[in-house]
Length: 375
Image (tube, rainbow, N blue to C red; front, side):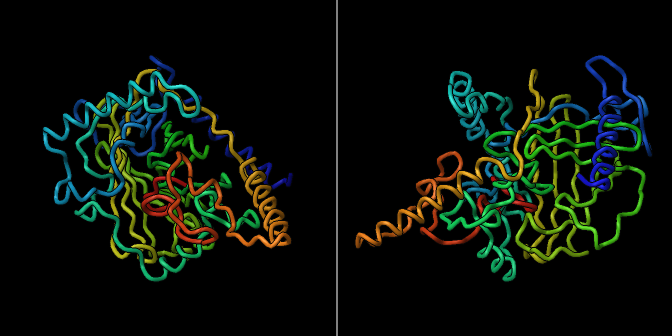
């Protein structure tokens, strides 16, 4: 391990330790604060006067909200009373099934503790649909590795997605609801806010002191973030993104990401993200995600790292298929390559691609910096 890496690791570890020590246990007081935000009556406050967003939050209740607005709700951002009643009943049924489930992912749906009227997580454009990709982004999407969400071939680590490789889901991708691992913890101290994501175990430490961003030649998966308060809302502006979690692949000064966190109730937080990326989308995208804090909810370790068993097993399976194809050819048997995972992705959803094709990534937006619903 290099001295430089040890220094960086120790510095980050020390800062997280300071933040954790400054965060309150139940019933304890906190300490810290940079620029104090304007006070709003009734809003919880830290001892130093900033809006208090601290807690462990989950987007599990937002899983019941589609990323893009279904055609049946065209022109409507919210459900009618009748639709809301039916959705509430469905959510209750989902929660009951989860509480009595067994096996993988058992109990995940049990944290669906609130029902919302939103018809889509995408709120801008006004139709609730993701805007078309630019021609350049479409080209890059067609070439993007699909990993376990596609049908191969898998010849090396580069053929897997960043999620398969446990590298990153990007800033927004880390906060959108997924099949599991939707925990997030917010910690505040004087001059900083830390946002810890369960999947993929990334922590963003965000200064609130208006310090300048690093030079444009420094690019990161999660970018470089700066925060400030607008009333009771934490506003985070992020630059210096490396562009790899989305389809632009060409990060630049024109890519802008603004996030807003607002505590609406003691156990309800609203997260908004405004993505202005002209190299990827033809229009600005805004998503709105409710985050809840059910009693007893806690983040769990997400023990995933690059070089994990999924890559080794996926590559091993592909090499076994190579040998089988060769053996069959010697016998005069000519057949197509067997699809990876039997045409099914995570959660048993159909991949929807032809065997051997390399195509778009998973989810409504393909995963990554702009709103994904998967890897």
